[in-house]
Amino acid sequence: MALFQIAGDHGKFHNPEKFGDLGDGLYEFKSFQIRMPFAYAKNERGLILITHGFIKKKNKTPKEEITRAWRIYEEDQEQTKLAIVRKAKR
Image (cartoon, rainbow, N blue to C red):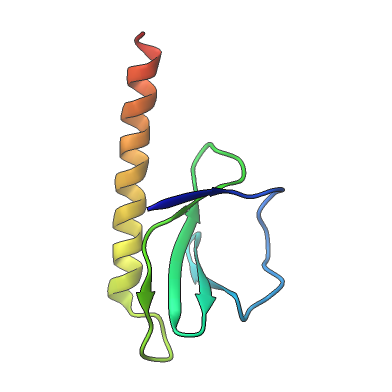
C-alpha cells in the first residue's frame, strides 16, 4: 500500500493512456501492462491510496484485481478509523 498527496480536487483525468476509471470511485494508474488501482482516501482531501500493482495480460482489468483493490482499500479505511479513535482517547 502506498499513499501519495496530490494537489487540487479530483476530477476527470486528462490522459486516458495513463489513468483509467474502474468505476464506483476506483481508478488505475497505467504504464504499458503495469496497473496500480487507487481510490481517494475518505475524509482526506487530496490523499489517494494505491492498493497494489499487477501486470495486466488481457484487454480488460480482471474482476479479481478490482475485488482485491476494494478489499485492501476497505481494510485500510478500517485501520485508519482505529488509529483515529486511539488518538482521540489520549
